[in-house]
Image (cartoon, rainbow, N blue to C red; front, side):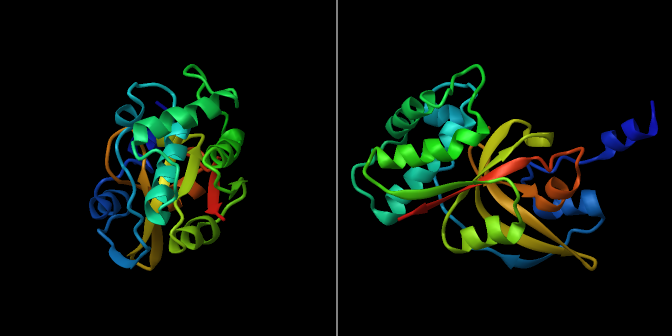
Length: 218
């Protein structure tokens, strides 16, 4: 076995983290100290299966559905189904016009268009933008601080070819280094999990490739 294979075996995944302190200890040698916690966004965090009624490649469709449901509740937007399962069916119908299907899933470049048209179906104007050159400050801190969840599509690593919703963040200090952690709903399971942004953004073998989709309701 070559040396790079040994390193790969020791590398911890950047996502699916349930206990940040434990993860930091295993990955970086200390439990870390919480320096800052961003505004937590409370959303429907049921699994993809629970929301759609089936297990398939519909992570992006479910992510758009979560965000619409969030704005329906927090902004009291009229006309949007209160039953998230009914809302999902509406979003899926629009996604199909963007070439979505159970076999290939959703083309990432189309996520913003699906979100825009899904909101428009209920007479709501939005500014939906796909961001392919991103930073933690602009696409996470700024959006979360404004109370806006972010859709994140990931190409490699733990969440390969998967879409999650970013619903918060925290920053931890280990030694003299800061480690941002993204609070996400991954849809594989219900609940909230975490992504080590440092590992995601810096390790080309694990991830780095992906996009963020920001949504502003006008």
